[in-house]
Image (cartoon, rainbow over all chains, first blue to last red; front, side, top):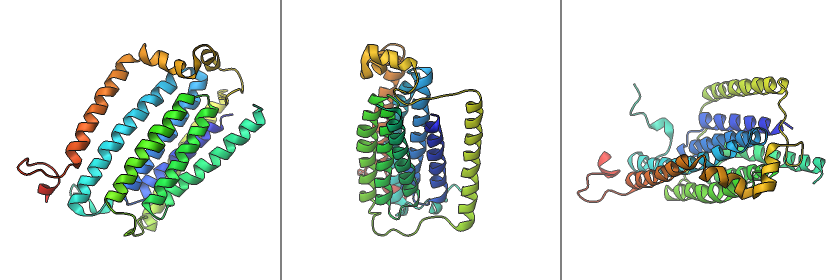
Length: 96
Length: 191
């Protein structure tokens, strides 16, 4: 029953596609969360074969994801105040 | 439970998860994408239950689908993105490139998957095959099996996580708060 790993890979690829094709910074962020979740799923699947450490790691990764969501959304809010948009193709200050 | 029923439940949840994930990527409005994401997280939580990660399933629903997604919803509503939405998929050339890149990543993952399968990897759902996890869940309970190592072997990373959360709270406050007179910080004076 390795289908869990296949599901995890499919979710990760969909998340990658979303990060690349969307322009809305919030949706891109949501797709990054999707990728994180896909990896968490793979870790939980492996923890059934290799012991509880996989689940511990997922616990920490969820905490980090929560912290990352808070800081990332704060950054999006402060960028929105400056540019009045969340379209990532208009953030070109660092472009050479 | 019967193995075939478990498999059926798994495949139903997997179909919902993949469909909603596609909904996140191709959703018309940010709020729709967000609700699709909640549905994906819920189905993944269901799969966690099938994999005997009961505590993580509960945390997934409460922290991810509850707290983090509500935070996203607040920000979408705060920035008023709901109705002045314009089509924000990238152009076809870039999309094709993106499809190629994610297809490449998918190909690598599939190749690795078949390597593992050839090496005799076999991961089972709850009740399918014997896993060393089953014995410890019998002994310590679903919560004890994750709490015991968390407060003994992994107690230092656990405490560091607390510091990380504190730093994140302070950082988010500093970044998102409006400019207070004379403080010389915040979004306003960037302009």
